[in-house]
Length: 272
Image (tube, helix red, strand yellow):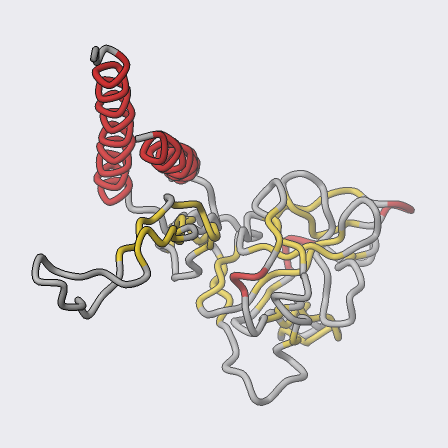
């Protein structure tokens, strides 16, 4: 009976983490570029009660007697399915259609990766204009440098095509590439990326090194849609159903603890 107490407690702890993850999904249902997370479970060790068991005639049974000792969370993985495309008509909003990530310069100089393409123009040093995230982090080009425009550019005339190539009109008003392209990278295992705030990710050994789409012909290139942002891939209805299932599982484990406690109480009340 003591075994059942600890087993049920492990179930409650695991389901609490499940509820926490679902609540985070629901909280980010309107966050651009957010990818829903799912909790994975694994069973704990098994205790062998009888290595060999027999029936009432003494004949061996084909299976032994083992009792499981509960469950724990093995991983919380992100599902990188395509989110819904939402039209904003903002000239500096971009949605990625494909498996790519934008590169963003962090405050410490490192590179973060995001699917949130809600960008703006910010004033940088020496009067330059920088393409940046809503929090002011510079967006990087294919060379890993911040995308900047000096005072000679009229930012209202800048155009960006589906491949992220930036152009500016010449004297005849024909768009000409200026030698700058928005950097888009892919990862062999995006689920291995380390999650940070502001819908940013950090590369890890599990995710592998970033692969620049413009330099790697072996991967399928993503498409950049101007005037759109990629919404969250969270389905609120599915998350509500998952929340109900997790809540009921938590409740059943708590009832197991109550039942075990009542059985222990009856055993303690036994008299000779």
